[in-house]
Amino acid sequence: MRSRVLIAGGGTGGHVFPALAVARALDDAGVGVEFVGTAHGAESGLVPEAGWTLHRVEAAPLVRKLSPATLRLPLTLLRATRRVIELIRERGIAAACVFGGYVSVPLALAAGRTRTPLVVHEQNAVPGLANRLAAQWAEAIAVSVPGSGDRFRDPDRVVFTGNPVRPGLDAIDLTGARPAALTSFDLDPGRRTLLVFGGSQGARKLNDAVVGSLGMWAAPRRLQILHVAGRRDHERVREAWDAALAHHVGETPLVRCHAFIAAMETAYAAADVVACRAGASTIAELTVLGLPSVLVPYPHATGDHQTANARALADAGAARLLPDNWLAPRSLVGMSEPWLTDDAARIEAAGAARALGRPDAAERVARLVVRAVHRSRQRPGARP
Image 1 (cartoon, rainbow, N blue to C red):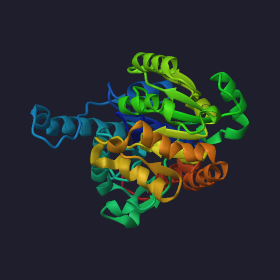
Image 2: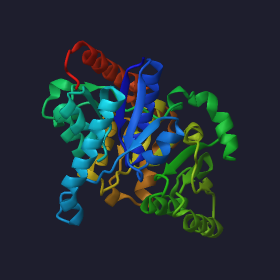
Image 3: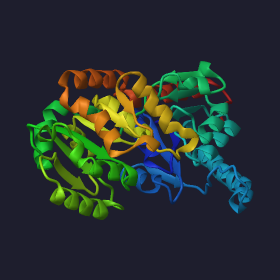
């Protein structure tokens, strides 16, 4: 019978996609995988769709300000932890792995209570509160950004693994996929492509900056913009592009505006430079694929972790950091056009990005979990 591992990581795709990638790697290694999650987070749809069992538990955000939700948190956490302890015992769980998000806390507490070996994976340069709590019971702490281990109390348990990317993305050959990708978006193979996106819902300020840049490019005939505006903002942005293009006199970049692109690997294959936010999953994808980027960190991210994510790439020469309060059409052009028009500089930045990428990150994290499973087997009486 295969050993079983319980995984938790939810709320957003940034937690769930790395967890799914590690689940696949564990399955390939002969380890059974089950998930703990809520009925409302991103994991509620993504995990079952990927074919994994999801045990739903009640969980609540770890908020610091006093509110009715804060007062209910201890009871909610206690009920969830008890349920996960039952799961560990009923399912014969040999090890646990958490990826952040408040649903990780009940699994971490349950692992500590049952002495189940625990691995923590942190995606961001600045660890979240849930993972900082979970790290108290962890045998190993996997991090995605070099140096971020210093933010944990016991850096001796920290292992740099990188951040697992969504399944399939690590196997993409950008050069080979580029011609078909350009054709699919009706782009010109003779131009350099700036890919702009702000997540599934878009980023209004980034959208406005790229539309406002229309007349500011020094070499518009050599450039094109693939703009993923987000479902929420697409209609407004499309109308803004139509108006800007209709009233502009002179040459302009070729523009293609989409609400959402499900197959982001195709968009990446069409891109030469990317302008986007600096979430952990995006950073991992850019580095695995070796794409230079202009990173505009979301200013309200917890602990300003997106700025720390972006700075790690900028310090390595793989990205340019554009703070949100500096974002404007002219600053966006000034940071992205040199890479679009200078092949040597772009290739150097692409190499720097690729040097930071860890296409085997899922396997690295899975090895830590498998090691924890083996230790669990070798320790008599460790589990109830």
